[in-house]
Length: 546
Image (tube, rainbow, N blue to C red):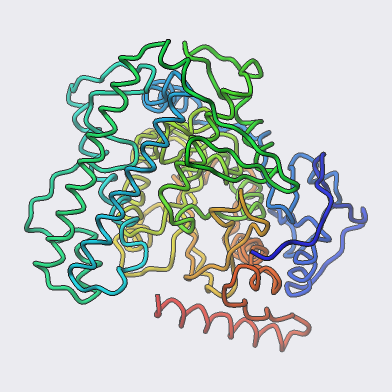
């Protein structure tokens, strides 16, 4: 990155002041204003497209667009409180090491293990004469294989399987890891990785051979981690006392945390956000609520493990999230209060589901969405853009909606996914009996919060795909909606909110990504029609490409 122009670091939440008198602005003018960071955009139900509000109306939300700090921890998850409590106590917290210091050192060992497994994949590709492995192929394989492994293990527990007691290193002795899959390959079926390699030009036999090798390498690393955990257990408290904690170095615009040969970076704003979450949701080693009583070393060790985990898995694009403007629309029009796929770094609401309960739960996570069973409420679902994960998440939403419908409960899901019409997820959602609205947005017309925004100057990235937003609701959710949900108003509001996250020209240059195309400015009725037609054409064309 180029060296940014020095700007003062805010010590208190920044708000943007506008005149109390509301004014109408065109879509294009609104985009230019938000790019210039001069207004806070709030599109609420019942208002016209592009209305602005005064600062008091947005006072409940902490927003600093320039730095990417944007979240609202005043919102409480509705309807899922009991599910949150049960899931947090049973699944997420049981996997969290009681010793934050040991947890940090285990994470260092895990990062090395993932690095070795990834290296084994690259070397296998080199032996097969592949000049460049498919981009993010290892990451897609890890997502899909862990999804399968977790589903199998969950069924085992439901049928009476024994759970291992949590200890200083979290859960040991189960032969499973939070990141690395430990699944045997049958040797004849091409999985996600095999199919990726076949598309790269390998034969089925060659592709399966590499996939088997990667499975074996991953399983070996899981075994090594189990031995390391057992070593810490055998060492007891005296052994833990000899371990060093993560050390922090404070810079002008960021902080570094380091332990042994690993380091992570975080902006001051993201650091403050994680500290606020940790103060509310961390517990001490005995499981008691500790809040502000947790010392800095414990907080820094937990944060180091968290940040190193997401750095290790690579693929920041998989961790991208909708912008704060989108969540304000979802909360205002559909009462959405929780995310089902998030991380503590990019979550907008305090409570959220995430992939790694063992490191995320101390920062507000309630565990995996695959185990989350809300009876009522409204939730945003934005899975990683991996076909297998999208398919499973869509099927789970449908199952939860059917159960809520039978129980006559109000349940809403806002499902965000790329416009991949060939996936089972897209077919499931478009054919759903609970579908109330859908919005297809062309790739050039919107962006997302970068999955690495917690360590970068620029929070937004251009979307590489068209995005489709599905609104799924039970009949009781529709009947009990006091705001009378309007699909047309929702369509317009979501488009404006997602457009705000398109990187500016300067941001695109810094990110070394293609610059976004200029957005049309609506000036007359004739121009509006033309722009609309052009946008529709762009959406259709981009969707076909996807």
